[in-house]
Image (cartoon, rainbow, N blue to C red; front, side, top):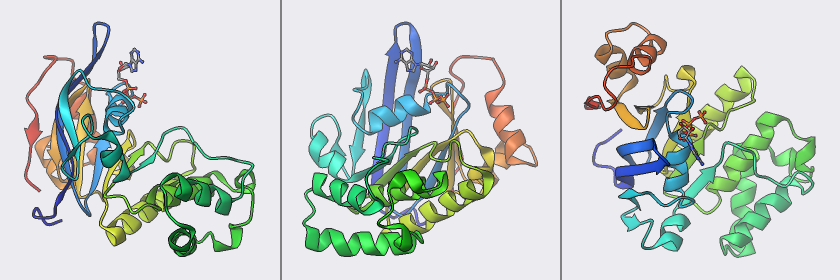
Length: 258
Ligand SMILES: Nc1ncnc2c1ncn2[C@@H]1O[C@H](COP(=O)(O)OP(=O)(O)OP(=O)(O)O)[C@@H](O)[C@H]1O
């Protein structure tokens, strides 16, 4: 991944607390266009809170989020227009057909039908779902439902794709398929992807891994650099080494160039 690709998403010194609990304690990260970045953190690390701030659902107590240089807090409509989001909880109408769900979403983004229809046809083809276009989403497998959500998130050709643990509840083969599809389609459209997960096997082929633990970035670099930094042979061991200690509440972030 070229370091010169335009910056798609920038998150600087973002803080968020719930009462006395620091959910995010000064998180900074960048995602470039065409880059597939895994945000890896154990339960409670702050991934969902960060995604809620990145997608404009929560306002941070401090810090700044920009999408293609547009400030999320000052210009939310413009910033959100460049974002595609797949939430952790499925958010799709089960009784509508695949096609109707996608056309409904295109309408929300103000896409005229003459532009939306060929894009939808192409995305359904890309995901191998053309034959199911008329089927109610309820009849689809969990993996295919997630593909519809991913297609929906890509419809308005976002610069950034946020995916919050999108493989929760899927079997290993469907999980691997969704990771591969998201990677391929994001590369095709040059969207920067931020993929939150707590599953180490999903980050193996990421361009970069950001390890979040207790609301702070503990590591930002390639999967190989993560193994090296933690002096462990496997990513799983490296992740555990970075996230199971209980020392200082704000250890220094390890930044390793890609
Ligand atoms: N609305 C809330 N009120 C109070 N505390 C919250 C709230 N949302 C999150 N937290 C706390 O903030 C911390 C970060 O939670 P968050 O859900 O962002 O983590 P996560 O990495 O997404 O975890 P998981 O993988 O379990 O979804 C946790 O300690 C959580 O209990």
